[in-house]
Length: 267
Length: 203
Image (tube, rainbow over all chains, first blue to last red):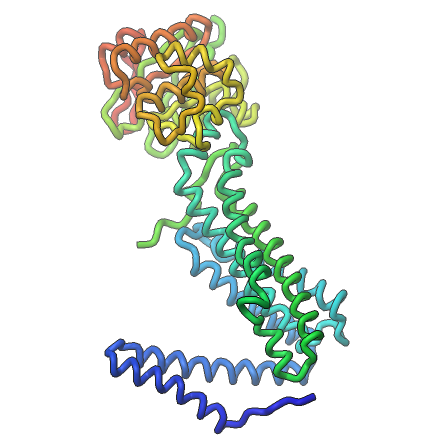
């Protein structure tokens, strides 16, 4: 294997490019230099910390600590879903519903990948479990947030149309179906587009990473295809569960539309 | 005791509306009057069970909670002042256009309106087509929210005649109107809604 290690001097050299950005900001009075400095600093500190955590986890290979790290990742992603909603559900539902669906979907798909196609020894080995979960989680998170966003904004926008069907005796499922369909479509479009463009427009990060690490391109490609399948599965599962559950929450047993269960609109 | 009322309402209450009770007999039309924002639409929405509400309601002696909500709404149908549309063309909103056609023509619209895009309809056309959409399902009780507000006199008379025919066949109606003349023409009883309080008097 031919792997080229980086030292501090290499990184410092590359950091000159960011400093160039800072100079540009000052010269053109973009007022970005402060934000740029903080963001760069955050990135360096966060990545070094993650590296430290991963190193520790890889030495321990403990199911408990690996599980805890995985849970922390899911909880952070859940916060991200909530932050991306214009009209989240009111109360604990706004965090709970997206996070719960993501936990189940990403968890199931990751465990499936670890126990069936990949099979590391032991199956929960963090060197495999955490990168796989991270990739599945990131995409499932995007799918769920898009689906929930389209559903809630669509129901608010089309309230009169949905209620028109309800007043004529449609069930809540039928009345909400046009909006539900739009929500699931928008949740799944990114992964469909990503699969169509992969390899032509963009070389996936994981595949290029493996190639840089010395893996033969043919092997890296197989891994990437597996990852795309896992991502598609996780996104479909998570977004469907989240959109259907949110639809149930925004209606009730008497087939009423319950937009009062959304948090008030943000200014 | 006399025959049970077609629609019996006891202790109906919801936010914005104080508890009220009334009976509606077959063939009867009850005018609903009161200033804008007094709660007339809230009353009709509660009767159709579109918003959370309390109360003992029954139709022909059958309790509302004993039947699925979609069936209740097919029998007790609410027609909002600004009805909603969920498809591109008029015809797509009707399961059986053949049954709707005579009603459409009775309200002064051509049969060809089936192919009209909803976005092209005027307010008055929307109101009449939405009324037909509700009537083809033969509801027992109609909850009409200003169904003739945007209509000229000819179209208004056509709507009144059509509803009167349904009443003669045993249906009943609650009819929100700001027009005192219309209230007297249609109804012998009147519900007056003011600040969420409902009282009954003569139209």
